[in-house]
Length: 82
Image 1 (cartoon, rainbow, N blue to C red):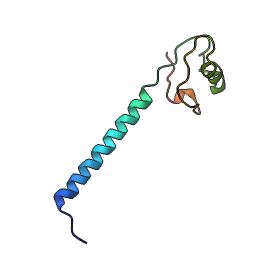
Image 2 (cartoon, rainbow, N blue to C red):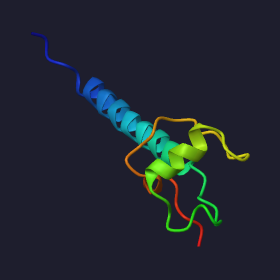
Image 3 (cartoon, rainbow, N blue to C red):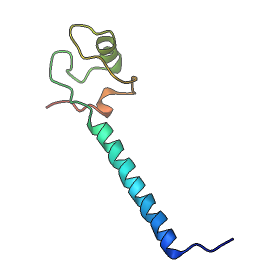
Image 4 (cartoon, helix red, strand yellow):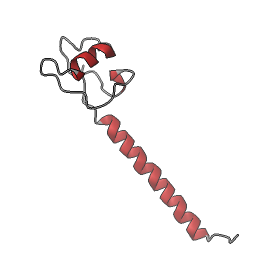
């Protein structure tokens, strides 16, 4: 087996670090893109996931549609507005 050049190994390390940084920034961007939960009579608490799904999946009373699969909790990505 041929021995690799030190410059080649450094190049692969640099590409690996750059890949990790890019994937981390994309992941952070996706999570931080979730809008805040606005204050209102339906968002006190915040409400349990089942109540969110009833409103945001069935498009009740001009609520925005949920563009993703239901998660364990809404506050994992959406932060309540103070």
